[in-house]
Structure formats: C-alpha cells, structure tokens
Image: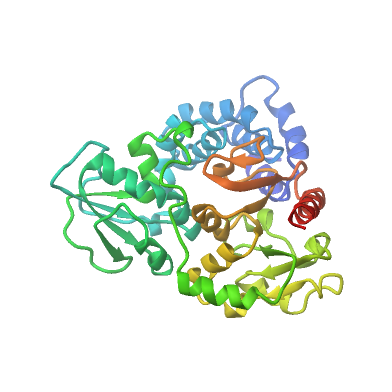
Length: 387
C-alpha cells in the first residue's frame, strides 16, 4: 500500500475515533525512528484522538521544525499547545489560523499595521471580531484590557448578531458593525489575536470585570413571565451545534440521548436553534412532559441572554450559548467530547475562562452515555438542594 492509499484508508478511521487501530497500523512503519512526514502526522492525530495529547506534542513539534512553512501543521500544534495550557507559544502558533486553505477566505485584509501591544496614546485602535459567535463572546472581555494597555481610542467592529449585547459592555469608544466602513484608525487587531499581543496567561483568567455581559431588563421581564408557570428546577438545554462546524459530529448528539435528564421536578427548556430544534417540538415519549421548546420564540441573542439569566442552569454541548452564559456569569454545564476544543483544556471539571461553568467530559471516544448519566445525577442533586 502506498502512502496515498494508506492516508485515504486511515482518515475516515481517525474521524470515527479509531485512533488505537490507526496507531497499531502506523507504529510498525516507524519502528526505526524514521519515516515519511505524513506517517508521523497521522500518528500524532491518532494519539490526539485517544486523548493522548501530551504524547502527540513532541511529534508535532518535530514536524514543525522539519516543515516550518507547512502552516496547517503549525496550526495543529497551536491547538495542542493551547489545549495543554501552554499559552506563550500556543498563541504565537495560533496566528497561523488564517493561513489554511479553508480559512484564507475569512481573513480580513486590513491596510493598516497590527497593534504590537505597546501604549499608543492619541492613536485609534480598531479591534474586529472573527470566527464564530462563541469566540466573540469569549474574547469580548479583552477589549477593555486592550484599551487600558494601549491608552488608545478604541473602535470595536463586531457582527450584527452580538452587537446589541456588546453595546452595553465597557472598554471601547465607538462601535461599528461588520461590513460597514469603520471610522479612521491607525492600527488594528483581531479579537482573537489579543491574547498573543498582550501575552495572556492562564493565571490572568477570568479577569475583570466578570461578568462582562448583561441581559436587557425588558427581555428578562418578558421571559420571567413566560417561565413563571413552570415550577421546580428550570434548565435550559441544547444538544446540537452548527452542522457546518468542522467538528460537529464529535460534539453534537440527538435529543433522545438526553432522556435521563427528564426528571420529575425539572423542566427542560429547549433553546436549540438550527435544523435540530424541531426535535423538541415532538420529543421522545419519555421526555414529553418535561420538555418545553422556547426555540420558535427566540429572536436573537438578547432573548437567549434573558432566558439564561432567568433559568437556574444551562446544560449544553460545546456551543455559543455556553460562552454567552459564562460571559453573563450564569451557571452552565458543558458536555465535552474526549478530544475537546482547545479552550476547555484537559483533566479538569472547571474552566479558568468562566467561573460559573462546569465541565463533563467523555472518557471514551463517542461515548455520551456515561457523560449524560453524570449530568443526570448532578441534576438530581441540584434539584434536591433547591427543594
């Protein structure tokens, strides 16, 4: 079997989480300690799929040293370093995120220099958001930090969907919407480049102020009245992310899998949006009397923020509402796959990003049952305390 055939064979296996099998296939081919770069890259991925990220790291570092211009390899290393909490080099390597085939189209081409982190009193700094809504919610906190450090006039450019929440946040002088022509600025920075520019360390998280977002009082009042008839523990929940997300198959599930969460004394309010929100309108029989779908009534993130402020808890897969809950300082429990996104780190059930968020991790690839069981038990305990 030539290299191309081998790669075509193992790629689907890696996607399916069969890292042990892929490792068993590749190890003998590298027994001498040398071999094609492709084999080493596949071995690193096989280790990551098994959750053995620390073992994958030196292989990825070797690959970057051998192929410094292979930018996807550098980005893979960035995700490993950040997942391990090694922020210094991790943020530097993360700067290669827009040098990949599938990301170059979303890079902003800005004809101004990037801010280098030094004070620039009297100058204007444009900070622009990027990537998904969850990323924006997570890194909004750094806008105020950047203003303090830069001593500049700060313009925040942000997507339409999160702009109203951002307007109530401190730390900028003007706000403009993505797609509009911003006012004059001297330097710029992507929101997710601020950690590299400012040398963000784990010890600085979550930072101040916390929380840094808030819900609209009139929306809160609306949803308080909407939820008032339901007694007991009020839990917002969602079970699926955006289908186009590169890792969606690894993080999303079906509504029926969450049946153990349906318990007497608990109302489950679906805040699921997208193709799978219909599942809550016709839930499995075992969940029917416990599930109320709010999804058709949710117009925007302001509604979501108000709901999260009025319920007792959010239970969710890795999704943008999790980051919104964390930014609001609201309780959220997150169900994570064996190989999570880099921001959730490893081997901990809390997160330095959000003090109000608790993590429930898979211990085997694709096995959600034990995770859901632990969440169901924790819900029962929380309900007992509330009573």
